Length: 391
Image (cartoon, rainbow, N blue to C red):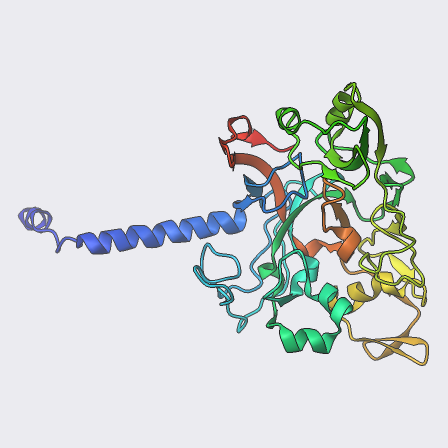
């Protein structure tokens, strides 16, 4: 017993303060990385595409466990950062020497219609670094040509889990048929859910009096009215509550929805104005692909599905003498390997969404928007939005 007392009375050399801090830092980084990977991740709203459901500089927690956490695809990466090294513009924070296949752990639910979802941008697999995030590589190629883009921009590929994170509302789940008519969304032939804060553009005609900016700000209207050049006519971004209020103003003579009347827009998916005369306000119908469903392939529907077959699901796909060749075999049909979704912003005329890049594959989904834990604007903290649940 005396021997053991002496051992206890003379412990080993005490850890240095530096080593204690280093151990604590390593533990904190590992714990934060695991929480970020499997439970929730912080996300900041960068644009107004979800106004006024969500606002620029809303800080969210995104639940990974709702749909099931996705395991890393590029595991060799700097902890707690996304795709760029801190304090750099272009340097990647990851290595592609090791790449794991897509796998998702079980979650509490599947994606439901009208969920607000965070995901990796499908069109972000190739990036022109010098342009704004809203202008993707494929849009540049359609506008300028591939050679011009490669000659003038720094082009890099990005793995699936290192593409830009985007947030939108899921308006269509696998098997749904969607159509936009005169700016109104229909799902399976019925009018779709309209979020209370959802904004649309309207032409507001006054008696010549300017719209009072102070009064508009009191109402919570974010975007200033845009003069059209015609006396008293303004283009305004409004939700349904704004619309009801402004209609009561004595100076307002009429309010009409602003609808894109172009016959077809080459920037709109599937980028084929010969077969698809669609624009942002008149689009579809289009059926959202579902796992296990087989479609007959035709020259008419190929623009809708070619990227799914070739890029998202990794098949060798060619067209030879009018016939389709998939993985070296002639094919007249294709069976989808994954579920897909259709997502749109609540600010319908200020959102780059599925109308501009197509279907959202299930392996791109990061998680479900859960709670706003912080929010601020140029006037300071938006206290009413602190710890606000997102529904």
